[in-house]
Amino acid sequence: MKQTSSKIQNPETSVPKTPQMNERDFLNDQLTTEKYMTASYNIALNEASNQSLYQDLATIFKETQDCQRNLYNLMFKNGWYAVEQEQQQKVQQSYQQFNGYKSQLPYTVQ
Image (cartoon, rainbow, N blue to C red; front, side, top):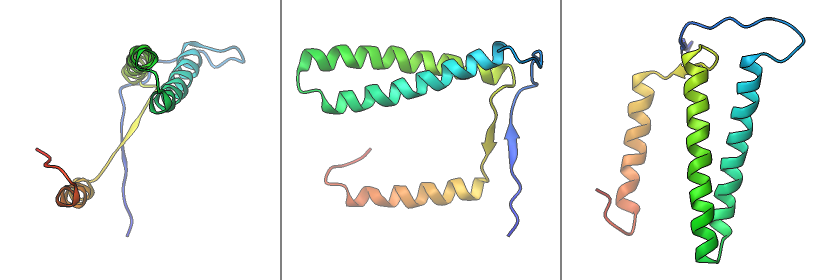
């Protein structure tokens, strides 16, 4: 079965094609770093045993995550970050699959 994918993307802002890093390169580098940092802070949060340390890490994690989101939004706005649109049927199938798991949880999910 052949699937067609469609990218969701804004018109791309042009940048110079030179060996030097351009605005897109810098933003991509920053976004990659922020993604790595949020993943690392997430691990640290899971491992923190001291409540004060946990709260500090949670604050830093949220700030880092917000920075990552802002970079993503900027790149998407400039057409430098594209996402694939999934077929509605596949989205619905996944929803039904995971919605069915609710009955297996030991608590009520609203």
